[in-house]
Image (spheres, rainbow, N blue to C red):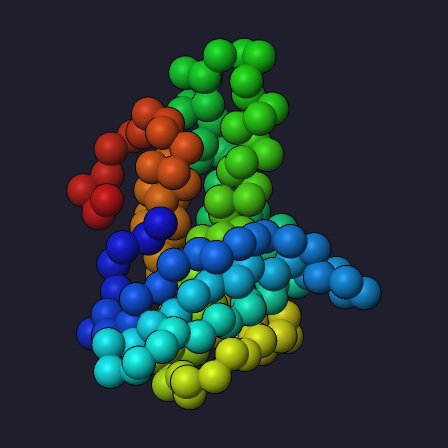
Amino acid sequence: MMSEATPEVSTFRVTLFFGPEPVEQADAVVCVFNVKKRSWKAGIQVAVEIGTSQLTALRRTIEVDDRLTASLKAVDPHEVSHYQERVTDVFAQAICRCKLDLRLRSGLVQKNQRMEADELMDELNEEVCARTEEILASIISELDLIQSCPSSSL
């Protein structure tokens, strides 16, 4: 997953536990992360929700599908649909991680918690736009795709 972190976030070790999964009775998905701060004796779980409409809008905004088209051309045509499904999952994971990073920067108490879909929506939009290249690179890496246009920022 995405490796760059600000100094505040780097004091935490974050791993994806599971997700994305649909949120019951809501138009959202959730990813659950295990989070451990170096000074804590034990880690916590943080469930991060993202509304599906925000996820779709962000996917369009940073042009995920257009930017991955060339990379997907190198995939066996019989496997393209599988890769497209995986892109959807990995993208949701990356966006949830961005949202979690926002929370980590503002401080996190040592207890299991849930970030609702309507939290930090504007901040998340800004964060995703600022980290577009990183998000796309993480998708390409996670799916072992060939990068179509190398960028010096990756």
